[in-house]
Length: 541
Ligand code: NOJ
Image (cartoon, rainbow, N blue to C red; front, side, top):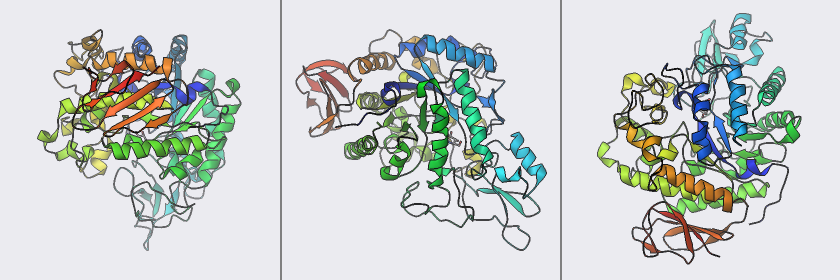
């Protein structure tokens, strides 16, 4: 594989990053909600994993209707989590440990309690304040019908009425009005927000929901055909992957270029398919990297996995970039549960009403461990969502009255939503919230949660935690380059990265390991054989 090099620093291209969902990581003040002081107190855990950086989900002032992706002040920390001084101190502490910190930038929408939206409502249609959002007169004789048939990603219509026949657009929850990026003041506002966080100490940004930034200002009806999120052609879709998105991304990249030798990372959440279109966002003056949803959503199937890995590598390297490899985040059923379900079962649907007997948790964990080693061995950056290093399962039995994700109500209770992967982490075997904090936990932790804790796994060579520590250390020592060659191996996915071979057994029986010294394996390998659902790394010279 050949890559052409460009300005992006190596840590952005090939780093390993730990994703923190701050409410659920560690709680220092005992109010049951994770906070920045909790993160600072637990940085040693993250450093012990040998990662290069941290991505922190939104920690801004917010009424928390969508886990903080509903921002009321992009320059203020939510009081539950701390203060701007705490954020600065976290950047400093993390940097001391060699960890860079990426923050989340949420440019597609704000909270409906953001002062911009409040003043837009007051100023009314046609006002300068109003043009920051998408207001539109409804259909029907008195505007009583939504202006178009667009649907919210969380279910239900994407328009909410504000009276007098006027409506506003929200591609997500009704509490998240979409910003109108055709308004030129937004570019300056976000440039200033980006500068604010860089000056405070952030090393980069994960940017939310980029696919939907630009909208067709005639708001035509649209009915999805073909697989979700697939866009073919330019400006066909009225609110996904429109050409104007690229100019917006370039404006952030220009702002980044003003700072720190340009060594600030820009990583896009751009839900666009196919890769040929997604890769356009990796142009030299746009994102350094984009998240790889084809991989994240791939079932445990070697044929599909191999072709999705190959497509990602081809597309990213054709732009001089490398892919990101991610198995879990705060939006998807945890890997150890997903991989424990039969392939024809939709994990998100199963959470609500699926047959519990279909879940094989041992197999799920086995595969999640093998999957982690496979992803870590690929060229590019690797993101690990908090708790994955403990092999945490999804908490699938959260009582309905505890659910906070807006998806639950907006889907008409047809989907439980994403709370089950956001349950506060267990740090100790016992204690009121298993060491999460001195108080309780904002989402109930299951009994027995402590057996997954850091305390229970630390020092146990067979634990998932020690497997992650070992393999991430080897990754930074031996895999810090771009070389990659497939190896044909029936029943397996195998490839070579200079002197390291990674092989994952997808067949039902054991297979013979290729020649070489075993560096690490996701389960013990005896007599030179690789058991099913196991990944091994070998050194061949
Ligand atoms: C993607 C984020 O990851 C998700 O958590 C959020 O609900 C939506 N964007 C809307 O901001």
